Image 1: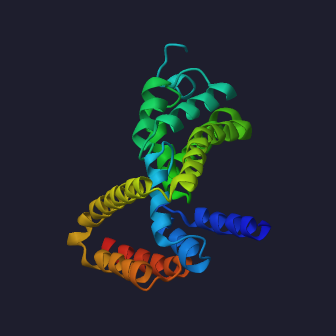
Image 2: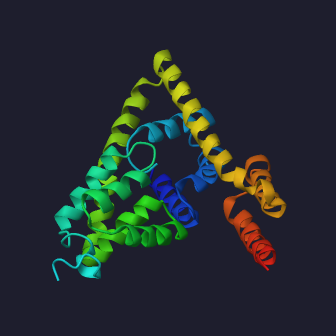
Image 3: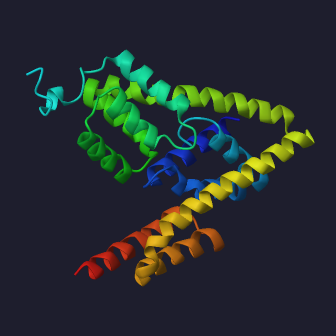
Length: 60
Length: 189
């Protein structure tokens, strides 16, 4: 559980440092890390969660 | 002095307090569906008058140049400008507090109900719409490149590397960014 938290923190701090031009630029890399590298969820669930984040208010 | 609208100090309204910065960005976060930038301009320049139009454009340019979400950077920059580091924290926390709670709530709801076929259909539809929005944005960004073959080539290389070859973002950027800057500087001469 803690390992997951640590990798989440590391991955997303790297992503935010790479996000030149806004959050959408790191979307493919986020998907690659979450779905293909770490297998935390299938691609369909990533799409669903992205849609959820888009539908909710606030910065994506 | 009070009537001098062009001076830096009085160009915008009075200097907002920490509480005002927090609540201002909290409101902005909660009403900004599908991107907060146009709303941010209206809230900061026209309604609250914290910044004049020029200052807003300058700060936004800085925030777009720096990595990270543009509006998130903007909340930090605006808070920092008026109240230093506490102001930056107030802006950032205000902006993300509301949406974070909403997304966590929706996420819990999704976890509990994702096996329901109706919910699955709902999310399949939402995901399709979100993908469509992304594609339309990509098309808008790519269209101005149609008369610049070298820039279009770099964009195409980026697409192949990320979308087809599934290469990691960092090495792709480290190769393509210098290349792109070189091409742009050559074509500017």
